[in-house]
Image (cartoon, rainbow, N blue to C red; front, side, top):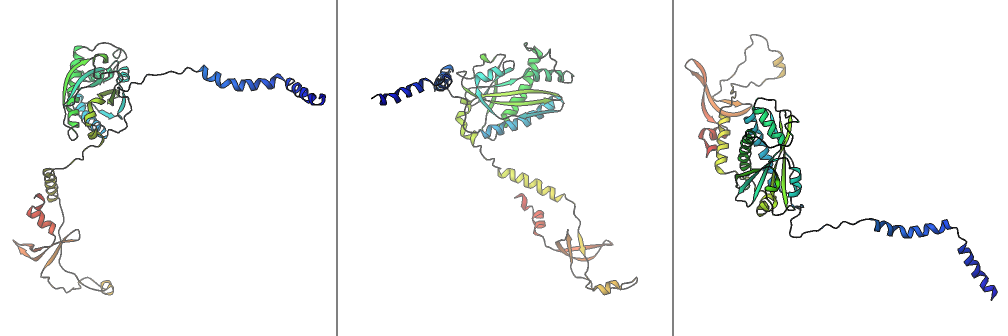
Length: 345
């Protein structure tokens, strides 16, 4: 019995005799994960299923086409208004919540616009810099807006009238940009300084489609934005995802073909009449001298070419004391079609 208890006592003693440094890592490895997890504060955010969130799976290709067309036309309109070098660059469409848009455009001049027959309202937002740049340019300045001008303040009556003038250009060109995709009619409603008074969405968390445009007037770089609620364009979402192919009408084809035919008819070409051809050898050609006579036969018909292509055949002779060719046969059918006007049919 004592022999059996001795190893037990030795095992206990050996376990008790372990240094504390070896026990400590065992306890810390077990406790660290729990402590690490408990030290983190998990933030739970509410998720409202009735609200459309900023993720839009489809690419709205037609809306991007509209923005590109609008940018080109708006650039021409600003150039005609300001008589300065201008450039308008469309940025990719950015889906975001209306709350996020409101925070970004807090200092912008906001204009509510209806896009009839679409339900709801959109926002055309002008940054203060573009307003001051246009005003300075129209009054003879170099378009540079000072730091004092860009401080937050209300726009003057003159500035508001100029904004309205630029807005009318934007609305006209934006309506034209939609022509081939979906017929809309822009209608100005009112202007606001703060986005909380616009109410273009039923909830701040509703999704809006923000189209940003970089406007360069001279050396000044400004921004301009168009904000459209997603619910506004959702009824025509299929058109925006797969835009209709532009179909050329028969009338457009006739106009283009008539213009092409007219241009061809006005082109200048050189007619070359090959009078004769002599077959000889290189030896005889090298032996030719001055006053040598080459015997030829007068051809009955001459081949007339343009660029080496046979065009017609004719008789050689004189008329009104001038050498001439009388047309006997038109070889190229293209000339006959041009003459008969078949391209215009």
